[in-house]
Image (cartoon, rainbow, N blue to C red; front, side):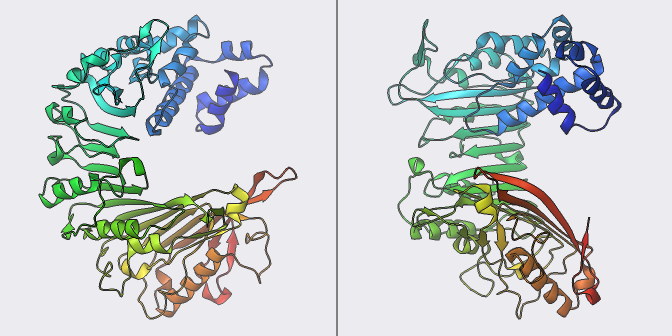
Length: 522
């Protein structure tokens, strides 16, 4: 328990309560006296921190395991004072979730009672089995009577091979099916998340068509697209994860082409290689459809260890089927293992993936220069795996970044666990945008960082930044740049072979061209 409080103190802001708590940590020698000396105000802040962090972790996981209410329950068992405080703040019990297959209904019911009339976040599970029709567990039965309090609902479609049993018998009656999932009225429901991981969805989510959710504004889906949902007209935010060869994208595209998403402003599209949800074997043709209201776009693509020509063409055509004339914020993520011939390789080649998303500005079959005319903020994320952090930091992620297709670009952000090499192919003969702010946050090995290396040796990302600065200066727009920041997270191997983060080197690129891109350390 004491370690939880120390962790909270190290990550929280410097308020008066935090200062008092820190003093207690330093002065008290025993955990018992330390806990008894914490003020009620400080305890409330600690409880809220633990609850908020637990909820964020649970909600972000595909297979969540530790219900946030369990953390609060354990805190309430420290002593009578802790119990009274936890019961005095009903928002600490507003996250309704349970362990899969064997939900602790005592805790679920306690949360429903202790949360009083506050809005709820609810996690429901639909079990998919080859021997039974889809069915839900007792969490739905307990929370359905409080559906008027639902604000955020997460539905997990979980595949099971048999009906789980406990020492007392079946945890649920599979014969009841999904009747209880139908005709739910949740007038205040704002956010819905549907997560399917290993099943070809057919009619398993037809119950959504009977839901009354007039306030629904945000929808997130993983390997399914609920075309039966009646509330698409009011959606403003949509996040989707597809297997490229599934029907989900085509269902989504049909809605776009039928103008069924007129208020959509935030869109996230993520492609992966989940072969258990493949449903298509032919390469369809697409009609180009604009999404004029989308202002913020997120695209994520997974780099496969084995090159798949069909998948590459299909994903490219899917992205070409949409146009985004008014997007002003674009976030692009590349993730995957750094493998070459099945063997880990410190070179992460992203050329094909980048071409799928950005296209070739001079290729009539690719994305034209006018595809992203209003993007002012671009973030590139590179998340490689398959090697330890030091090996990744010593490697290179290679792709071509065509900045010229973003004529309105003002801010460029790069986050990478490798040194990115964006190449200089698109600098020659093409007008670059008048950037105002550049920020790189990248990993590198101790021998390749600007802090440790000699002036004659530069990492790939540093070479690219210097080449970009040359281009902007030659075009007479270098004066537009207000700040350029480079943060290098430096790694090295210690004596036992494990990677350790040694230091962070932060550099600010000066606009003073007379010093030839001099660096100011901060």
